[in-house]
Image (cartoon, rainbow, N blue to C red; front, top):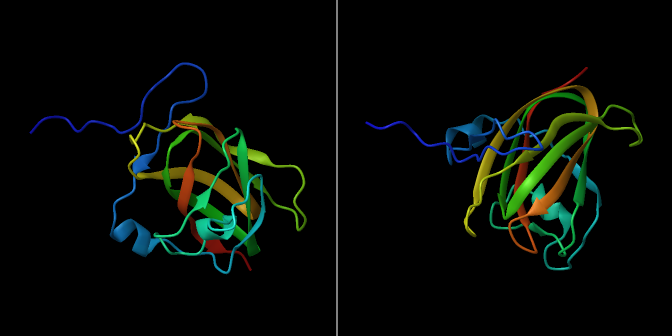
Length: 165
């Protein structure tokens, strides 16, 4: 058998992704849904595809951006949590970074995943798993720096971790 080809492109500039493609079954089932998370803020809003669709657990729904970059989505967790992985299903994202804020009210964010490029899915679903280290986080911000087209869609964001006492 030949070597498996990575779905992640290496490039100069922002850090290339160390993400692994997300398998359709077990990885999602094992993910601890830190629910009821809620969408706190987003830089774009469409009535048919609001930001809440990115975290509703339904892979058929999605949040769509409105064409300009960067785009941001802030997800607020119900309690302080430790997060080890961010699982993302999307269409058209080219470069993304992830940030965390530990305070009750969102304020200063720490970068947990520097700007990373995701391979072009040519209009097909992108499934990525990002290994991160977030201790005592309350808010997670995804920043989409660029898309492969004018619009991108985020179908699902899952956070793998545990609620802190």
